[in-house]
Image (cartoon, one colour):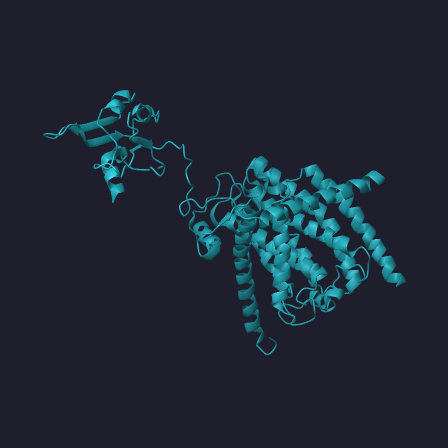
Length: 329
Length: 148
């Protein structure tokens, strides 16, 4: 990559990231419908293309042909900006995610920090969408989403601090580089702190809650709030929220695989590359879907209790323990 | 303090059990029927519209003796029989059996009253059409078609 002029490299990565976000959303929707189908002992989509693989693209075309309607009393600027903002945050974090030894758009030293800085803006997009559409359900949903995101950002960041302490770097490529084979993955307790599996669990649950996925999808609780913050959205406005959600799920799972499962490294140390990264990430995406179709939605109290009473104390304990272990050994 | 950890442990265990159940369901074969491509085999006592029993032994292909019992018994009056007695023949011959299925209530009195058991319920349920005439069946013709 380095021998190309900078401008080509930028265009290459812009096109690649945009394609990845779009195709990831299409593939994730298809996977989600297939997984949910088989868990309910149905087949899922099967008519459009082989095994229904083109179904999400057909859905996307349908969404794009729909008229964009702005509700009469909505805030036109916030209403239009919200879906774009959620999409922007989803796309921007891809900039620092390493897909291969050299396949990273910007090899930033503070990549981890950048991801959390940008993805926390996503909650603002939900708030804007909920507030801007002037709908009581959307506002309730937006407030819920904000309280939920703040509650889960705390344990997630504490866990990430633990990981930064162990790896000694915020550069995602460096963190991946340290986990050269299965035994060196940071999910295993002998690599720095005996509670690393618990750290992984906390990180994964928080990532799921951050992306508003079931069983934490209180932001779009269909049975209570119609569709939550995107109640008033139709056509591609809704489509962008949808794309953004799957983009965030992908980023969350990619981060979990980078921090704990060795990113683009092979478990046996052979042939590292993008295929391992995608394999691990989509395995985690599958687990997210599996969880979604297993558990019913939690209550808002149960959700916040889980964060403040379980996740935060546990992650703090792990942080202190890890610091002590790093000092002693 | 003890109950706090016990709750977390029990809660986590129940979540894992739940995941196990859904995973088992996921790898089991699907139970749905892909309708237009696959169809259900109808139960033997399913009541579709009535049909003349095909009888290979009879010259006419059916067992009907054109007595008109079904037509008289039908509470909705949806059966119309035409018959004639050819020159020199001893028995009447069925020349037309018209069933107006739009009026039929599937009571089955025609099938019960038939002295020669010439009527049966068909197993047809894919009956969708655009006009009322689609549901006027010529049962004699259907019976003839089965001969071929």
